[in-house]
Length: 111
Length: 116
Image 1 (cartoon, rainbow over the protein chains, first blue to last red):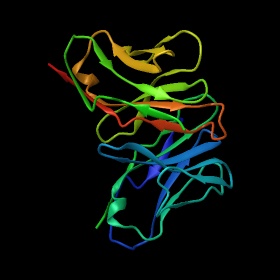
Image 2: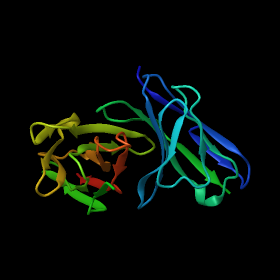
Image 3: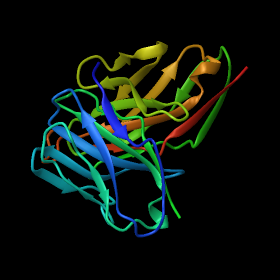
Image 4: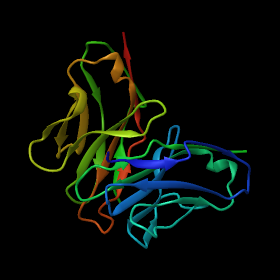
């Protein structure tokens, strides 16, 4: 089954404790992206990757890092999380004119 | 820069009535347009897209959307709403001619409530 898998689904952490949210896709898509969703703001792009070792900033990259060492994986790293990064995070992948495929989301709470 | 506007935060409609969720866009080239739906505690699910061709596109669950180039709109419609259609709907645009041609820009979302 074609899918984008994010882990974990829920995460509660404390300010400053490094964390990684994993994302993996099994569709051989070149493009992958991270979004955060906040009430009233819709989805805002954090980082995206056009292919292996090619990443670029989206609209709200501050406080986040990503890497694309393999085509299927695109982890999101928060080196020093802060409460304003409490949000719902989505990973997506795509290719060509096809619509993006989304993971089920990771709800992050930073206290 | 590309952008999407969904002018209504919330749309309420009675079950069985037609529904419309509005979307307007701004993009420099010819747009790729998409509608996604999000149910509680779930990711975004693709509903339909416009790439080229017929201005009226049909998608999943009986939804359709009409591309209007002169009005730069891509409104989502359904002839008869179901309670199960209640969800959050996102319109999105891509400019396939740009350097970041995969880049998808989303509207802020419209919450649809279908009242029994």
